[in-house]
Length: 353
Image (cartoon, rainbow, N blue to C red):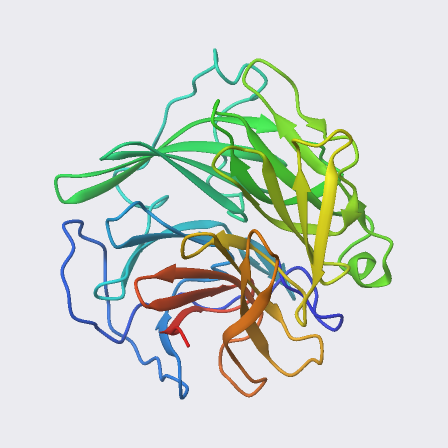
């Protein structure tokens, strides 16, 4: 997540509204849409309704986007988790967990340490990772807090004009740590980031006290911290297709760090950024996208980074007067950049510069 020192982790409850702003195009999957006012700022359009849509991912080439919905609370109010399906062609959206097609079917042989079904009344959808199984089915992993700290694992089926989400299991994690982002590995395992301890809180990320590593899990094994992976508040993560390189947003240091696993010991390179980088996503071929608050405190930016040279350029953003702040994720869909926020009731998109 992207935080500023004056913000707190648990977020204002914002009454759930629905979408406005329609766009041209069609999708073969129906998602709910109820119009409500959602004025755009100059240079960016908004879809209003989804709460705390911290992370975004494209669902193959369907034109659909999966968006996380973090939990939180303030002043006695609470926000439960959500997993949103967004149609980029017409700005419609729905919550897949409350949809009629949602089901739970524990695969205890693959996830023997999972204590039971997902508590849909006390969970958080934080970081997201997708793996395409076939044209209609995807693995969806999320880092989740709430009733338990775990990677929750689903199958997402998209066909015949509908989307169906099925929970399959979980991998419990250290309950003292807020895990943030994750990437799915080729064998069905994952790597996730240890952002902060719950006791230390977000302030520890700014003070430099927050130190965390990369946690790996392989089917049949146990979660383990990768040696030599400690960073200051590691946040977003992306892995190269051959799994040689791991790219991690070191939020506490304002850097993107590359681990080269082909070297012994593991070699690291980094680039300093003018933002506090949050989630990391693949964009155009050989390029990475990250987003976060400007270090000068005046709004937020999206940065594109060359995965080979680690050269970075700013490709968009907004000032502190824009309605959307706390931007935490950037995703390229066609010629547009879509952005999510850890704190708010909207998703944004703008033309790539």
